[in-house]
Length: 431
Image: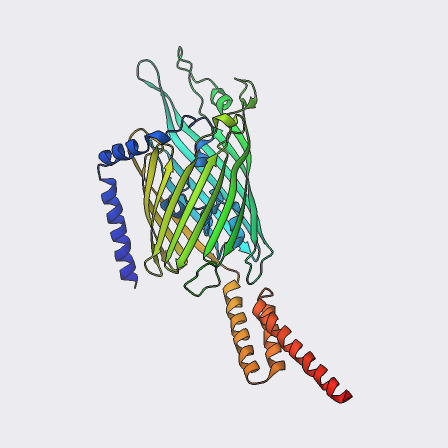
């Protein structure tokens, strides 16, 4: 088994490396011409643009169609309500090799405690910044960066056996845009505090909601196969002018947006997801950007290997992505290749990697198995005519899962039958 996993992993890396070597210029021009009418004249009018960039990994492989899925630690940038729906807690590292020598590094943690979800994340976008004077000599070198910290909390309300609940959650976020100091053009000396005056602090929040259902399900599982999500991202404001070189005040608007999405798993090994996003410029609604949309598909080839593909249309340029996920014991690895035309006038190919570790489910799966076993044993006792024994087993099942409605209904049925029997005896005794 280990050798098969190693072989499949090697083949995936080989395939993706071949993609990096392709000259996709002709494909770029064809796609660019096809979507020319969707060029967004309001693109680029907001600050903290890194908030629009995925940390990478599985959600990017699905074309960013994650608002209505959000079933792993990638939920932070898509739907903050999903942490209370995670099957297992996770800790993760992400690396996204973005355009123009820029990179994104992300560290995240999220866990679920029954109906409560909690999480934290820090994400850093950075790109080298080098300044040259009129003679071509380098006079300053540093990094431009945008760092965002997230705190997440969510709760699944009204959860039951048939209705899976309404998950509602939010992120509180603080972002810092760091601009390096620049020089005086005449003296080539660095102006202390000049970068700080252009730096910015963003304070914002995300809110989200998620509903889960069973719909035309063709496999056995307690997990619903249909998810519908709604979220609003980056609601807040940014401030600049900290260095004394400029006046303190409101910075450019944040890249706020509203998103909705849906995911559907008709079969255990197959999943589809779709997503729709509408930017909102709260400083000037008429300058809000055009909508974007994405779609993704995931095929679970084996228990340890999944293949994903996605397409996203944003403005006049599309983004095509391909990725894979493989599991080794408690570790989960994702690799993604993206042919991205949304961020450059030239074809851009980039990749992302993620490594996640499964932190366990705090015994939820084991309790569920005990509950199922007690319920089944109760049915056996009921069939034998041992009604009291059956009731005791179903009560024990409810101790494991108080939302296990079938056990509760069987207890009510037995108690109702006993009361009816006692009433019939009373009537007969009166006669």
